[in-house]
Image (tube, rainbow, N blue to C red):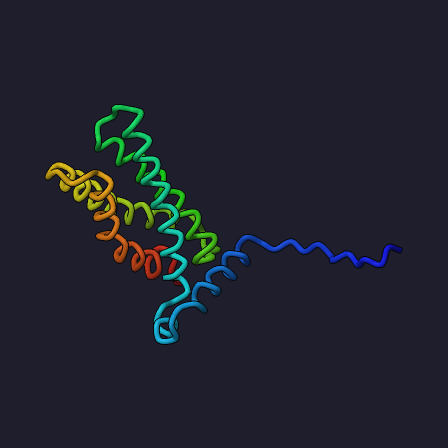
Length: 159
C-alpha cells in the first residue's frame, strides 16, 4: 500500500454536465432575473449562441472559399446549424424522449418560417450595403424569440 487512496472513477453523463453548467449560469444571474428566466430559456440561448457561431463560421468560410451565390451560402450554413441546434436542444436542453418524428416535422415547420425570415433579412440588408455578417446577426435577433417560443411550447412541449 502506498498510502494514496484512489478515487473511484465516476462517469458523468453529458446531459448532467450541461444541466450543471446551466444551473451555474443561472446562479450567477441577479436574483430577480433568476426567478423569471426558465432554465430552458438559458439553455436555448447558450445552445443558440453556439450553433449561431457555427452558422456564421460556416457562412464566412463558404463566402471566402466557394464563390457560391450568397443565398446558397446562407442556406447551407443556416440549415447545417439548424440541424445541429435541433439535436442539441432535443437531447440536452429540453431532454425530450417523445417520438422524434413529430418533433422533427414541427421543427421543420419552424425552420421554414425562420429560414424565410433569415434569408430575407440577411440578403435584404446585405443588398442595402450592410456587411453580410452584420446582416446575418440582425436576422438572428429577429428569429430568436419566435424560435424559442415555438420550441418550448410546440416542438418539445409536453403534450
